[in-house]
Image (cartoon, rainbow, N blue to C red):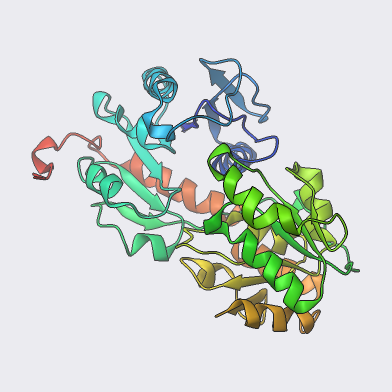
Length: 355
């Protein structure tokens, strides 16, 4: 079986720093190759994932202006990738709506992983592709959609890439985009209420520069509240592995939250607010706590280490969010599609009529 994984042209696979979808694609590609699957990744020329990689654009472009699915470079890359992959790939695995638009022009089997929160205008478009197998990354996300073919496959990561020190240092961590929906300002509030220092890592995208300047920067003193910028894999290991806990004070319906399982892989519990898939990922009292307020998060932080040990938190991650588990579920899906007698995507008569 030959599988194509189509990424965007904007970030390298794996990402140097920011890039949750690109990290997912890199991990999946690595796992598929280890399982004996012939895999090709369509990304950009700066990608270093250890499988066959094809690209139209040599250099990455990040940050971009506007929404990714409005970008002509993404449309050009996606249409070329699908045309190229259609010649010799049994399954083409898409990760953006731009790529989905071109799936109707070839008769290959298609998988589409949804990496975004529910948006009505995107879900409306999805109804026009009844032959595509949609993968949601949480049950919470799946319950908000109504596509004809749909299943949940949780993200998984290669735990060998993460270390879990037995001894933790006296600080909390925040890792993610510095944006209101990610709750960076609430992480600062929790640190001050708990009396425990906070290290913040993440990208400040141009559209959130005013938020950073108003809600985050005034609190940064380099000692109690520290901003260390963007971090790569080694930086993640250092930040998360030595932290008492990862703060995840989400302010939106998070579709999954990859950083939560990265923290768990480092043996670090997650202190999260409710929202979206959080309660699917964090097992309360086992891999962290799911809280109702910043005050409750601060209280839980003061109780650390509580019932958590690095070994037990990492074991939970291994059991439920390992790379092997994710790869096995995607391989089962690919095989189902290959085994079907009739190519998917032909039943245009099934297309919905949307006013």
